[in-house]
Amino acid sequence: MSGGGPAVAFGAPRIAGFIGARLSRRTIARLGLRRTLWIAGLLRGPALLAFPFTPANDLGIWLCGTALGICHFFASISNAALMTYRQLHTPDDIMGRAATAWSMLLRLNQPLFILAGGILATTTGIRWALAITSPSSASPT
Image (tube, rainbow, N blue to C red; front, side, top):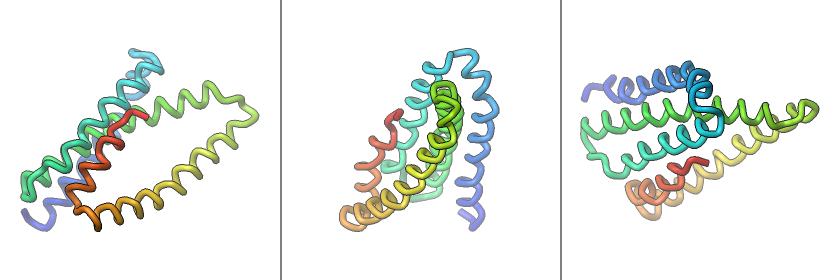
């Protein structure tokens, strides 16, 4: 694969996230908020299970890119639905605090899990680390 191939394979799936975000309003209107949360959460996960099993060649890069596209599409729908749910069920006077707490929780946990994933990959190997962590990443919550 040429030098730009992986950039396209891993950059193009971001378009799927944009499309999912644009379709989220229609999806919520059609399925309802709770149903959208569950379905989008469930459908984004199985794509992540492909990572440990992809071959280490050009096909594997394209399979990972496709899996990322699927994940981004459903994750963007899930994120829009979750934000809508939170805004509907959080009192107006604490909305700012709830959004700040959510944002801080995500930003604090990401580096910790990146560090834990790096330690796991160093001790077990990358494929085993992906196989161990993919099921938990695939959960709808």
